[in-house]
Amino acid sequence: MTKRIVVDPITRIEGHLRIEVVVDENNVIQDAFSSSTLWRGLERIVQNRDPRDAGFMMQRICGVCTYSHYKAGISAVENALGIIPPKNAELVRSLMNISLVLHDHTVHFYTLHGLDWCDVVSALSASPAKASKLAFNYADFPMNTGEDELKAVQTRVADFVKKGALGPFANAYWGHKTYRFSPEQNLIVLSHYLKLLEVQRVAAQMMAIFGSKQPHPQSLTVGGVTSVMDILDPSRLGDWLLKYKYVKDFVDRAYYPDILMAAEVYKNEPSVLKGSGVKNFLCFEEIPIGNGEYLYSTGIVKDYDITKLHPIDENLITEDATHSWYKDNGPLQPYDGKTNPNYTGFKDGTSIGVDSKEVSSKLLDTDGKYSWIKSPRYDGEPMEVGPLAAIVVGLAAKNPRITTIATKFLKDTGLPVSAVFSTLGRTAARALECKLSADYGIEVFNSLIENIKTDKTTCAPYVIDKNKEYKGRYIGNVPRGTLSHWVRIKNGVIENYQAVVPSTWNAGPRDAKGQKGPYEASLIGIKVQNITQPLEIIRTIHSFDPCIACSVHMIDVKGNKIGEYKVNPATLRA
Image 1 (cartoon, rainbow, N blue to C red):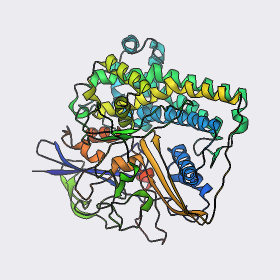
Image 2: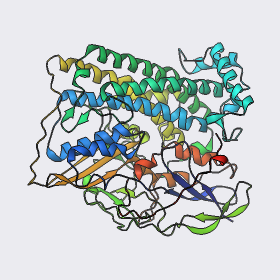
Image 3: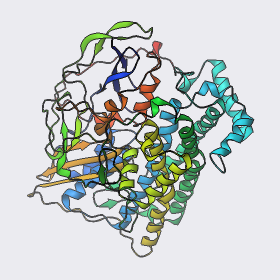
Image 4: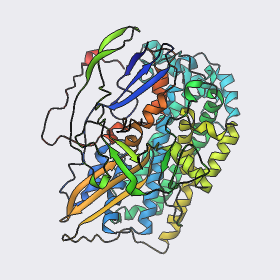
């Protein structure tokens, strides 16, 4: 007999995500459904606007991925108009991208995903002396793991417990059977969790040096960048370099060692080792370093086969809305994309409640439409995008920087390449992608320094003929994976705009052929130890770093009521 488990909302992510799974009598997931339940957006707002407004407005898609959409909007218009930014602008944009990667990935692992691996309560019983010695197994010079520092961390968290004010540590599944770290290992990760609260501020400041602020930087424009004085000021350049080295130090001495520790301990935990489900991976080149090379590579890997790299034909990218709350089922190429709402709601049913008994519930209509997210496909097939795809495609492309980092990780952990196609591998890949910016970001900085010695240009002219029609796109790779913005321009204004974002690729529902997206496919076959504490589901989904706000970016221009939400502050807990 099967049972349905509803996890809504998935917390510690950006946006509103609901996951429903069907488990058998042994609590093994037989089917899974991913749904975005909140509608918002911007694609209609930019219609009939000056193309130069696109980047500034589209970055409001999300409060986390602001620079990603900002750059995408600017670059899509540049591509449409045939504008090539000067080299200085290209390199400054790369430095801002590196700043974003370092900030985004470190915050994701510790603040959003770390507590899926680290049992905070267990850390309170650890021996700080043993933990301090253990840290040297994973780093030559571990950060924030001195015995005195670890004692201070324990005292700090213990005080929270005594006061009953656990804050971000409240309402979790402490003591869950799939936690594998020892008390001492949990204490090490907890110490780095708290240290990251300081480090992330510095990473955000890196972005602000060339972007004026973070989030929502303001220094990009169609044709280049406007932060001319910062680029030409040695003190500002030096400030960025110092902050870069500070954050890189955290990556090298805390983040990467913690991932090595997780790989060692969790390599025998079945719930994090199951295959990714979708076996195809897509990535696009990103972060030019000034000599015609990019940190990321372009291509597709199919069926887990990293010995062969397939080229990308942009015309084969489509979005299907068969099971999405829109009228036009598709598949539609993004230049011709439509976003007309067709909300059909939920259906009555039963699911498992907190007491393990069945309760009446409103469930997704999985035979019909059940999500505000569309289903992107490449040549009719689902693709996983994100750090795992970036590393896999980089290996297939024989990208020298990615190959060096990935090979070292496999050697350090003793894991086979096949192990990366899993929740554990996806989490590790995000750290490796962070290492890519930490280890090689200095090449971009040095290229900028050399170029400004002889070239002070930062912006190309903006030219548009209002009697012509244009179309263009940006395709690249951002912290959560492959992102593309597609624009049509007519009469000097934006006629149509579509954004196909990483979490759309990964979180989309089934398509017309019944093919599951990466979120749904990744859950099939996982055994849930306790159906009232579905940590396995949350850990798997968190490994993608969901950004649902990015995936749902359209508003109802007629003002129709879509849904109603009421929050009673008296019932909220920290």
